[in-house]
Image (cartoon, rainbow, N blue to C red; front, side, top):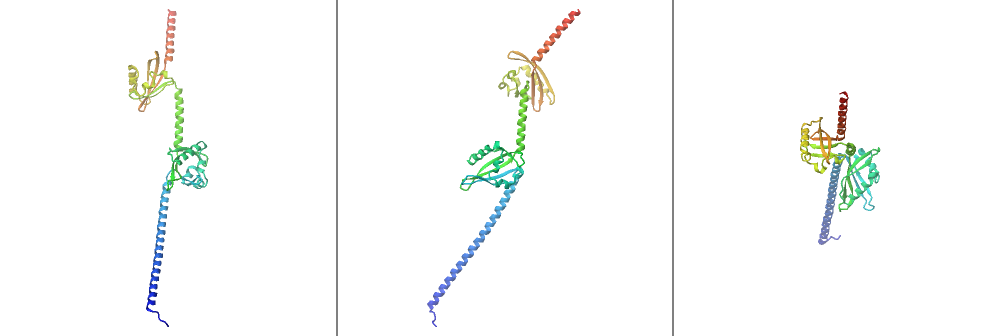
Length: 318
C-alpha cells in the first residue's frame, strides 16, 4: 500500500480547511439572510399594524363628520373617474349604501337634481384643471325621493410625481340652513311687496334722530332726496320747530306705545298736511307718516259748510 506523501497530506488538509471555511461562510450568509427576512417580515407586520391602526383612527375621525367624505380616482388612460371611497354617512344622508355608491360609475352625479347637475360637473372640471373654487351648493335626490340640499368642498388629489390622480371632497347636508334661507327670502319678498303697497312714508331713525332707512312709494312726498337725509340727523334736515317736536316725541316714546304728531310742510311750494305715528322698536325709532292733506281739505270743507248751514239756520230763526 502506497502511503501519501507529506505534501499530498498537506494539500488535502488545505483544501479541506478551505472547504470548511467556504461552507461556514455560506451557512453564515444563509443565516444572516434568514434573519434579515424575518426582520423585514416583522417590520412589514408592524407597518401593517400601524397602517391598520392609522386607518382605523382615520375612519373613527371620518365617522364623526356629519357629512359624506369621498374620493374618486382618475384612470390615466381613459380619463374616467371612479369613486374609490365613500364614508358610511352616505346611507344616513341619502339612503344608499356605500357598496351601491362604489359599484356604480357616476352614481353621485346621477343623484344630483337635473337643474344643478351641469353646474356641479363644470365646477368639478375646474378643480381638476387646478382652479380654486368656492364651496358648491346643489340638490341631491335621496333614495326615498326627498330633496337634500348639500354643500361640497373639492380638492385635487395628486400622485408622488405631481400628476392628477383624482378628486377628494367633503359634502355636508345643509337642508335646514338652506330651507331657512329660502323661507327668509320668501318672507323678505312678501314684506317688500306689502311695503310697496303701503302709501305711507316710513323712517327708521336712532333715538337721537339720525336717519337709517326709509320707505316712500312716491319720492316726491319726501322733503329732500334720500342722499340728502340718510345718515344725517333730523335737525340737519327738518325745519327747527318740527325737529324739536319730533325730538320730544322720541324722548317720550316707549315700547308698545304710539306717539302722534300732526304737522304741515311746504313741498314744492304747496302746503301739505301730515300725521306721524312714532313707535319705539328696541334701540331704534320708527315713524309712519301719512299725508292727510286730502282729509284735512274735506274736514275744512265740511266745517265751512256746517258754519254756513248754522248761519242760514240762525238767520231763519231771527
